[in-house]
Amino acid sequence: MQDRVIYLITGSATTLKFTFENADGSIAVTDGFTFTNFRIRESAGGKSLLNITSGTLNSGTLTINLTSTNTTSLPAGKFVAQVAFQDSGANPIITDPFEVFVTQGII
Image 1 (cartoon, rainbow, N blue to C red):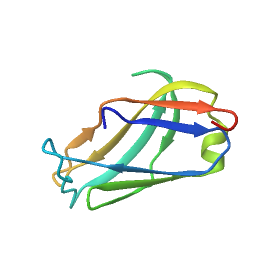
Image 2 (cartoon, rainbow, N blue to C red; image 1 turned 90 degrees about the horizontal axis):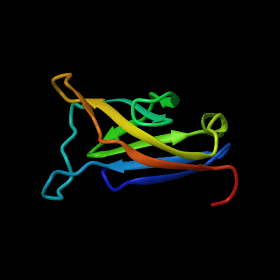
Image 3 (spheres, rainbow, N blue to C red; image 1 turned 45 degrees about the vertical axis):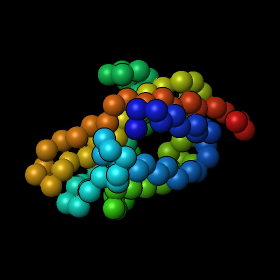
């Protein structure tokens, strides 16, 4: 996840897919894990611009469907995002922050 960059267009629907890997590159076992949220912030620890709490976590891959309504409120700019979920023991896991670029037209 550390090298991930996401590009979004304000007012456009899109599907995001994240595949979680172990240090050796194998797909992480996420059985019993629960997706908590995908959040875009102005900066690390800054104001939240978007918080999505519905997604599907299956066999190491998280799928999040963003609607045009979700992205309409996003201003153009460079932001940070994180994904949070709980493991099978209800322990919180949060990814390292990654970049999100939002534009108001075609990239």
